[in-house]
Amino acid sequence: MVYLVLIFVCLFVCSFQLDVEVVDLSHTIGPTTISVPINPPFNFTVLERNFNERYRIWIEGNWFGMSEHTLTHVDAPAHMSMGKEYINEIPLEKLIGPAVVLDVKRKAEMVQEYGISITDLFDWERRFGRIPDGAAVIMNSGWDRRYPHPYAVFNTRNISNLETYRVPSWTFEAADWLLTNRRVIAIGVDSPSVDFYSGETLPVHRRIFRDSVIALEGVANLDSLPLHGATIYIPALKLYKGSGTPTRIFATFPKCRSFLHKLKK
Image (cartoon, rainbow, N blue to C red; front, side, top):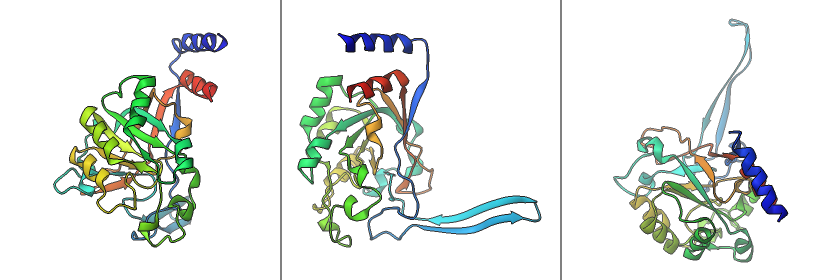
């Protein structure tokens, strides 16, 4: 009864204010940046960091270089599908939408390579209704807590061998069902990949890119989002012919929903 009263009060307050909570869903790119070893390491070079006598002002400028597929990033369909969209060709309306969060933290604690299943999708819809059109559907396995430690993130003792990586991800069956029966803009994970590293054919990447859907990998801080009701923004760099790009993904939702989310915890 008390809980219902709190919900009513919260909804009443929300009707009179439009304040929103903003959540950063990205890891910081820097010296501890994680990427698979086949990619060149992150490079950050200071070009200028001093008081400029000519302009009489302090000036800083840097140069950085890294793989497109570094830390929190977006995979464009062109990443693994010839003739599909590059990152600069993705329309803005496909970079914003409802956030659907699949909380599988307990399952991932028991199974090191837990895969999002069709049952997980059904369970979410049983609680919140049909997955909305234009949604980004993201796995929350609690994996973001392992960053920035590469051996923990890839769950291996041999960081140089990709086949030893054991991380939670998506099953092909779940991705195929979702794309066949719902209209989504993105499939995402808080782990390094939407596919298991132990496989060789990368079926989830193949499937989602076939439908021109993007992949979000290395998403952070999903525990701060409600499982439904948030809007996700994916401000990807407009990189010419890019197969992907690091991005500072974020989400917003009404502060009253933030209150209810914390209450449920």
